[in-house]
Image (cartoon, rainbow, N blue to C red; front, side, top):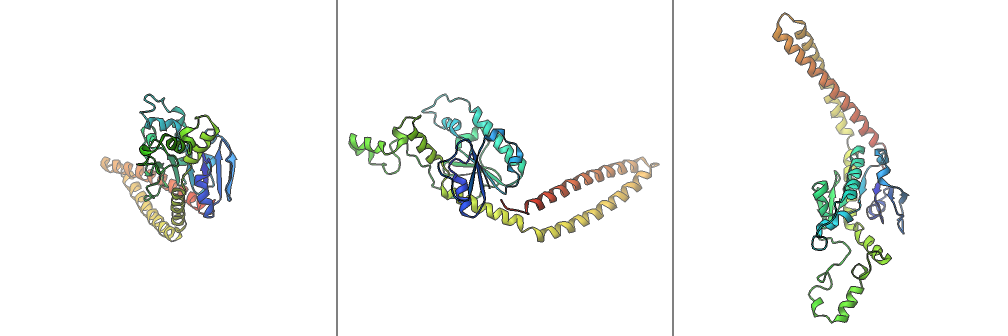
Length: 289
């Protein structure tokens, strides 16, 4: 499993716990690397589609800061255009789709304004990709408490004394620390980490997808049988088109013959693509990384 923008291995930790081999890539090495995970320092924008080759599943959580401010108009009435955020997201999506393996990309709700609607969401975690589970746990919140009505203080905050309010705010670095301080960055990194409930749900769904892919041998016999039948039909169409094309003394038959030949040519091209895709499916079923 490949974990792009791995951060603190929010995705990879759940996959590794289920026996997956996980490789995480990011610009900054995390303070702790979970067992079963391997970290590689690198810039995703400098990577090509070959980066994903050999992996059965890909997860990615590209930076969301430039998107998030577009969902907080009361604090940021004129946010800048998220050029870097869009570039990172679209480049990552291109890497995943070029590879062809199932993938999940996570970001915030306002990102939909710039990269398209999400497939599903789990609380504030919005997901894109062809590996997104149709059913996911809800009532999940990010690990940050904002404003005066956050969990634990709701209904009580206004009744507290000034000292109690000050102590409550001091308990969370996100509320009191400077945006450039180490405490604030540490708290923000923890808050942005994918929760275990979500990552475990995606990991389980990824295993179901792989089981479905690996249970194809019985279905491949039917595919081969369909190929044999299709080949017989193709040969029959070829014979008919030759016969009609040779009867050039009847212009109408000649037109039919030409159309049939074009159809046979298209059939040949489609067969080549089908054979190529079959080889790719067989290659993917040989290993599980």
